[in-house]
Image (cartoon, rainbow, N blue to C red; front, side, top):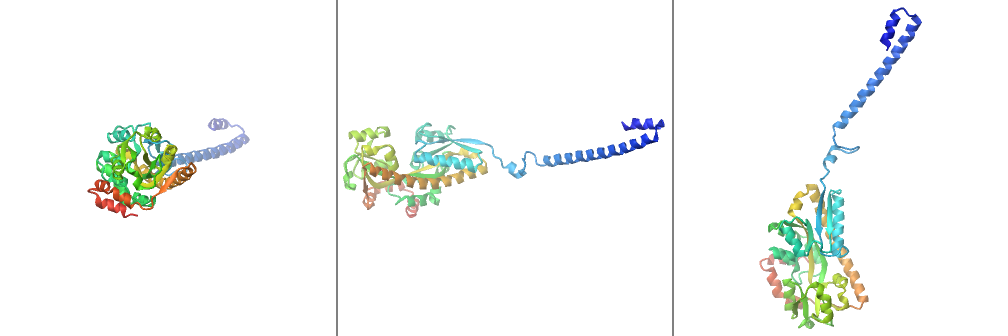
Length: 373
């Protein structure tokens, strides 16, 4: 190094050599100073990055703190994925995953693989943990103490689809969504849906309400439908759904009821090509979530699920109307006879005892729904 060279210079090396060495010493000093300055700058840059731990380039500390823990919610649907309900479920899934930035994933199990509606509800209300979310009929909650939940299924409540959606988006709609939580069932409603109005269809020609008298009409365990069929002068006959096609074909029953699109998708038009558009009941349903699953979500994730539910409800409204119109046109081409009901008041009058029975104690709430038209 240059200090050793200085010692040699003290031994009286030539002056010219010493002058050259001093130039070299000055140059080395400049290089050393520049190197030290660069090192300090690098250290300063590193300290600045440490002020925002965990952030990425262009990301603020606040943005980094907004990252949510990932969660997967299992969603039960009894109908196929390509059905109206299945399509709305898929839309809801897409909205949730987008609005939550992928932190919430909806795992849809369609076609009843997680069980029938009552099986799913039993699991959810008992805290079984297998199902986090499900689409259920509003009326299904009456078996668990729901009273308000029965109101959308009361016959001849809604004049048309627009009337139903005014209800669904109203304060009364929210009260019905809130009812299961208020009853301590461990589930809460997220948003309302519909599959369209239910109509009666038959394997022989009919022209009006008077032709229902004496007809054997298939019913399930639904007490409201059973009451409606009885009050219309027909004979309610319990038949499992998977036996309905053959029962209509063989004459075990004369008719049944379904929304138009489901009537077509189950090919009932092949054995019962007469459909009377009485619209006795709206097929109202709702998507629910267990409170255990809800409480696992952050405030941001809850907001994403809520917003996705509103969007899914609107999507259902538009899709249901579109599917029904398209289905009706196809059915006409297949030879189905549609019987229009110009005046539904005689039908409503015939079912007045059922209406009174299922609105008892909630007359004011029911009146609010009816007056939303």
